[in-house]
Image 1 (cartoon, rainbow, N blue to C red):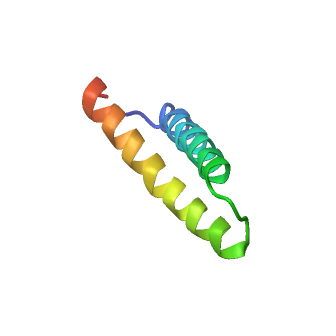
Image 2: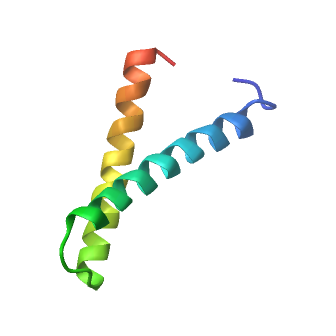
Amino acid sequence: MTRRTAPRAFLLAASELLAWWAALALLWLVLITTVDTLERIVGASCAAAGALAARAGRRAVTWR
């Protein structure tokens, strides 16, 4: 990776992680019954872990 493509690759990875996180956090909010502070923290954490796993899985399948 050259110095010129490094920021682009970082932005693409960050945007993919953000998209996965938003989708998984929204799914978490739809599936729970009560929304309080602890539920939001747990949901955000689980969505972040899921986003990392989804990106790793996609990269493993597409060989990028």
